[in-house]
Amino acid sequence: MDIATASGTGTPLHVAVIVGSSRDGRFAPAVRDWFLTRASSRADLALTTVDIADTELPHIFGAPAAGIAGARETLAAADAFVVITPEYNHSYPGTLKNFIDLHHAEWQAKPVGFVSYGGISGGLRATEHLRTVFAELHAVTVRDTVSFHNPWGQRDATGALAPGAAADTAVTTLLDQLVWWGEALRTARAVRPYAA
Image (cartoon, rainbow, N blue to C red; front, top):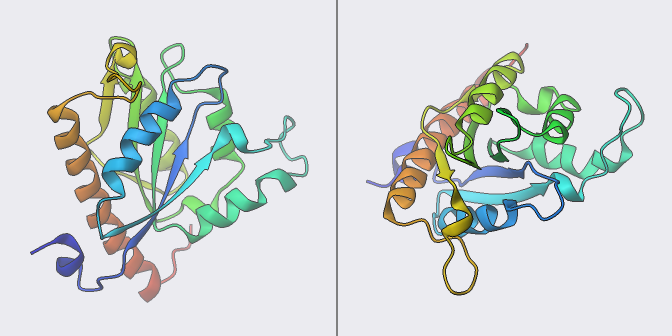
């Protein structure tokens, strides 16, 4: 029995994939492309990408944020999220924190999964810091993650990220958990709207 059948709805889970790096020369597009290739093969998911490098974030908190209106609509319509993040200085990028903080109700009662990359830690410290942020926003983070340790040398002849079978297994586990939580929380919100 596949997940879509097991969920009882057969309606794909709408997942917003958030690319959390805006640094010049960033590795994030390679990770994004790898993830989207695997996630898009699943009939139980409908994917939309939000790249913070393409989003006009205000530099003053509380200032008008017209540049994020499209992103806000995408997050509000999503049933779940996957955050792709590098690790900078033992944590996640400041621009990602800014993006997260500019939204509130959009995150509530929805699951969040993580795909991280970095040096020897594979971005896991960034992921652990993000868990506490999303808990404060009333989101549910799924346990299993995908992390790439020193991924810069894990490219194929075309330049695409090619980490091997272990990463494929990890992304399947992550997405299975995201779908379970996403379906459960979507049903719960429909029955009883969440009030923080």
